[in-house]
Image (cartoon, rainbow, N blue to C red; front, top):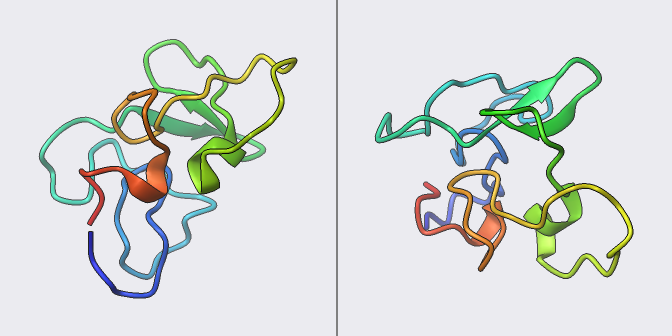
Length: 92
């Protein structure tokens, strides 16, 4: 992970300055693989394959306490349930 000062984008996992709230990149920042997630209109974060919702709090700090919402607690970059986007090993 880089020390650029920017958190990893939840879609492309890049830390370069860009509008992360509107990122629609189909691939990760280094073009190594297809991004696991995408944003729907209204900025909802979803799994690219089936539009299932992903928990945004999980991407930021991995401690979402909610067990009642339908959003998945998986990394929006790679799909792992062990971490969120900010600590993904594939992040820039």
